[in-house]
Image 1 (cartoon, rainbow, N blue to C red):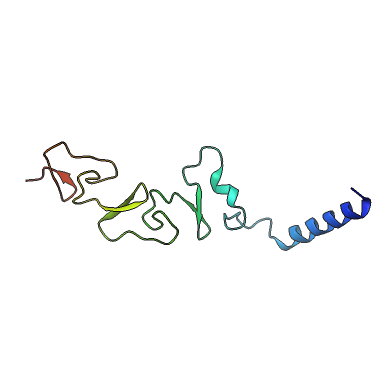
Image 2: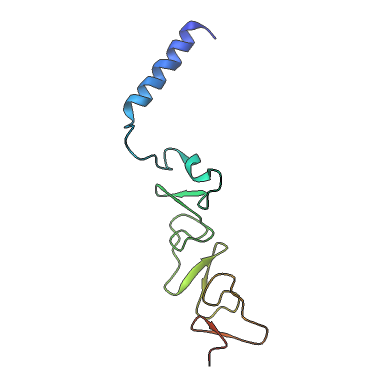
Length: 109
């Protein structure tokens, strides 16, 4: 690299750093890697927030896709937590064979 290229690169970095506020919170829209840090439970960035689109009711499977009232986001699908036998009362809470899900409880009489 020539000296002119190094000076040019350094000047552009200084300009970028001068435009950002070092005290402002680092948001994922500017730094998307923030969400994918080691051990992160929220690897996706939606509207400046780290979320998990496989479980987030306000961003189910994709940013901005909201689940309806009484539904939950399970594995990226909006499902009825009140009546779904495979997600009764919560994600992956399966009712036993032959029983049903009512009001979020298995075999509610």
